[in-house]
Length: 406
Image: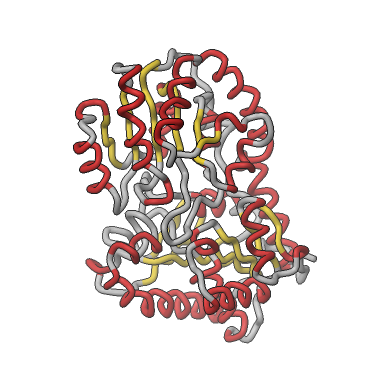
């Protein structure tokens, strides 16, 4: 790869549209930390108000057009899977979405080249990377990373075949939790070709513990407003909490396709002033909320179509800020919580038991905060971006030199 930095081409669907965008930014956070080792170009879909080309933190970002601007709504405000389930007409956007990324990336490979590609999500980016490897003439190797929805929500023989084909075409498949690795193995992908590599959280500088007092009555939720996040179950538990603790308030931070239904559910339950929908909040403002809250609740569930949380880095953000947590019982959270914290993992669908666990946590804040301090020290070594980016950088460099995970 010569004396200059090797060239890394990143394919993704979720990416910040501009600085301060509340959409998930983990792909950019990884990309910008790889700039010191690679020349990084990101190919992602365009959205209204975003530039088609720009440099962000040293990353060259190319946003391809896939429809008239007012219709470029497949990705944002909930993610592709949730948007397709809510608005079936958006299926018509998929051909342009896939073809646009394929052609844009192909032109970049023809004009600038790349030493290695990193495709985020098995479908559709993994499919694009596999096609590019065949069509580019250079057979550029690629790493594919599954984040959850692509692995869990796409079912049936056809999608199983597609995911297996992509994973076997990749030099390495990474997943963000051990539970996901087991699911990839079920596709027929050899274990040696799959590795667990999570995304990261800036535990060292951004999501840190504060010195101020917590609001003893504040429950916090942060995340997309989609079924798998389980917000409805949290609302259903609130009347049981309020009967014992009428001072409690719930702050819901996030946006997504379920917002209107959740607001209506809160009204039906008579929660009134006890629940505040705060909408989108900039990433830079989240630590202040985590440091205020008495309890962070992430009531993850398996959605109707099978989609579920791939890892749950919001838990690492909250714990990084010293905030006590309760989390829904899905397999991936074991990678964050680990042994000794099973009592903080709950079944959100059991409304009565869920409400009781919330009350237990709220009524014993000192002991729970001490436990979060112990857990934080463990998570900092595994999930801080410095460590995560170094591991991904080593993997991509090896693949770019012609290596293969085995």
